[in-house]
Each structure stands twice: as C-alpha cells, then as structure tokens.
Image (cartoon, rainbow, N blue to C red; front, top):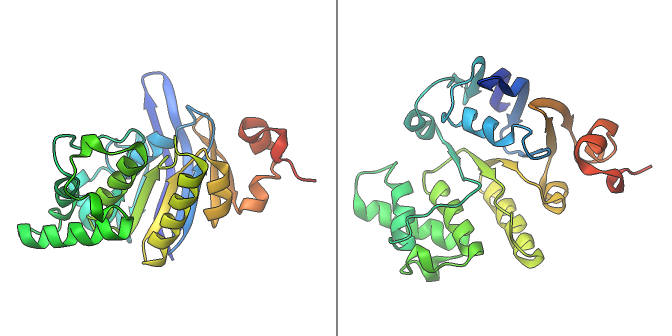
Amino acid sequence: MDLLKIETVMKSFGGLTALRNVDLSVSRGQIKSIIGPNGAGKTTLFNVISGFYRPDQGAIHFCGQNITGQSLENISRLGLARTFQVVKPFLSMSVLENVMIGSLSRTSKMLVAKVKAMEVLKNIGIAEKAKLLAKNLTLEDRKRLELARAMATGPKLILLDEVMAGLNPTETDEFIELIRKIRSEGVTVLLIEHVMQAVLSLSDEVVVLNYGEKIYEGDTQGVIRDRAVIEAYLGEEYFLT
C-alpha cells in the first residue's frame, strides 16, 4: 500500500523549472532513496512534499489524504517529518530542549514532552549528551540531533535530506544501521543521499532525478546498470556488465 503518492508534480521558480511531471510512490515500510546530480530538484521535491512549497501542478497524497498545499502543521500532524541538508539546531538550547520542541507537537504537557524526548535521544544514541548545549556538539551528533528532533514528532514517514553528508566511513556505517533501526520500528524512510554506499546498502528502491525529471525508478541493481543514470550521475565505474 502506498503511504506517499506524488502525481505529475511541477514546480518552477521564474523561468527555471525545478520539477517537471514527477511521479513517484513510497510504500509503507520501505526505505526509498532519491539520487541525482546537484541541482536535479531533489530538495525542491522534499520542500513540495513537506509543505514548504506549493506545487504549480500535480498532487501529493499521504496516508490516503490529498495534502497538496496544506500547512506544515497539518502535514506534520498526519505523521510526516523531515530533516534538513544544513542542520540548524537551536544552538543556545540543550540537546534535550531541542528535541522537546519536536515532542511538543504531540502534547502540551511539558513532562510528557520531556519523557518522549529522552526516549528518542536514547534511541538515536545521544541520551548522554542531553544536557549539553547544541553548539557544543560534533557534526555527527548535530546530525543525530536533527534526526531526533524529527523523530520526536512521531512520524509515519520521515524525509532525510543528506543526513550522511560530511561523515567519515565509520560514522556513515553507524548512520546506515540507525536508519535500518528506524525502519524496523515502523517508520517509512525516503532519503536524499549522495553516499552511494548508503544508497545501495539501505534502499529497497531508488529514484533518480536529472534536471527536475525522473529518469529512473526501480531497484538498486537496475540503477547501477541503467545507461541514462550512469551518464547523468554515476559515471562509468558503476556500470556492471
């Protein structure tokens, strides 16, 4: 069953078409990746799905509802959360307080929000840093905090925008396991990623965008053999005969 369905979505900025007739679907329980060169429209698509931008054309359905043009708050309440490419925690607030902001979207009771935030921090692996100010975190821990803030909203679907960018190989492996853990707990995952190790390891399916158009949607073995994908993005080193 499709948890998310995007139909012929278009988005332009002035004379630039960022998305052109994009269709894709995400099934409940999937990990699905979106890849493509810089400027392909990947983050714009996330912004349209999550309600930051209204599409010029097309429709977005989530949990069986048409969410096209709905407010960020309404979309979040339905169970859709996202992270951002550039992490921007509230630097002067503690790690726990940052995550409580997410949990307060589900309750008005501070104690309940605090308990939920601590549960999420334990799950994400930074509970021991709950009292630290966000400004004192490493890049890896800021990315974990970004993920924790989104998870604290109680999502059914989480959009992850390059959560592994800038991490070393060991940290990347840890994030791959963390994303698998999130999926095992019932959260569907749609991620944008340039780290192909992560994409090939994690994904049930892959979507490739190029110049705002979808040029591939399918499994990981197909994507590394697709000539259009190789020419647009991967390069010859991924071509398997």
